[in-house]
Length: 255
Image (cartoon, rainbow, N blue to C red):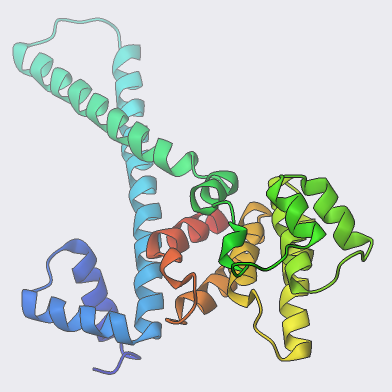
């Protein structure tokens, strides 16, 4: 199937609506796993669908609210049993919509860069980089003792250089809620690797840089970097870049 034709979009929409036949669903899921262009469109459609659902609920409850206010402002008159039932049904429907809207709106509006960051951030253990019997650096010791300002000072004063110190300074900046400093440090790791043709802590720096971008509200940069990680099956953090995470960042960008 040519993924450049409108047919694929129709299939994706049918899949979201749950009306796609089983055989076509299986074929489409194979294409989603193998074709990044189709996967991108799928993620965009999911995010758009969530936004449309929320907007639709807002419109419905707004209409019912206006109707009920009109009824309340109408002079009191005798109400037939049938009309009383209709009014009661409308009130019940409005209450149900309010509950649904409340839940959906809560889930949407409680979404924040800090929340997304916290849900995906985990403290980095130095045992991931240090072999048994190897001596630790001053920056490593300070990081292990959670002396984050000291780690940054070691980095800034040039007491110790290299990707590890740069990376630890970035992590320390994150712990201190200093997003701009973290971004600078993680980019230093990546740039140093580029200049030395090395890959030391490259994957780690990219992942934590993407989280730094999210908390700093640099959503375009975050999405670009997460897409790079997601498209690399061999990346250490490939499985952490889920479709849900990508959708959350897109929703944050659209708000």
